[in-house]
Image 1 (cartoon, rainbow, N blue to C red):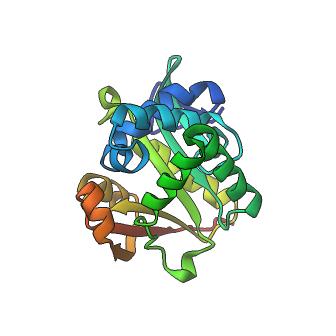
Image 2: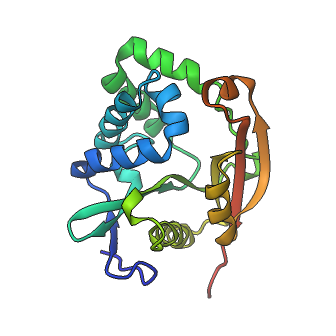
Length: 217
């Protein structure tokens, strides 16, 4: 278990499949602008259950084995996904299999149809950057440094992995998240507008932000 000084009386540990319900709830609420219309067929409750299902299954991009959680007592109060790029073909295949298991064949087809509007804003030269996804903190636990602790935790993982940079994507109008990332040294490197995304979520597009990794000798 890794103890993080920026999260007093808390710890950060690798996520487990048993964390799926808690993490699915946190992610669905934090990403509610996307979760309902894109992942839940317009139903936020369905999106939460589907996120929990995807999180529980190992091997995919939305799986517990690519995430860490912040703990208070025995309660999950925060979660962050992070992993090195490029993604292996095997994991991409397992991601589709997990989606089929959770959504069914027709539902997965509809999900992929919606996801076509989430065209990445990542520049081509950032394709090998370490990647952060699905940062979420429980509402009652916000303002106590948990999000910052998780962001720094992922950064340290990127440094141990030998990455040159850490990248993430965020909706352009998610100003609170953007300010948080900026405080941690992330800067904008690209943006992509999408009329389809705007129709579904109200957000005009995606912003790609990146933080360089300092190598310590």
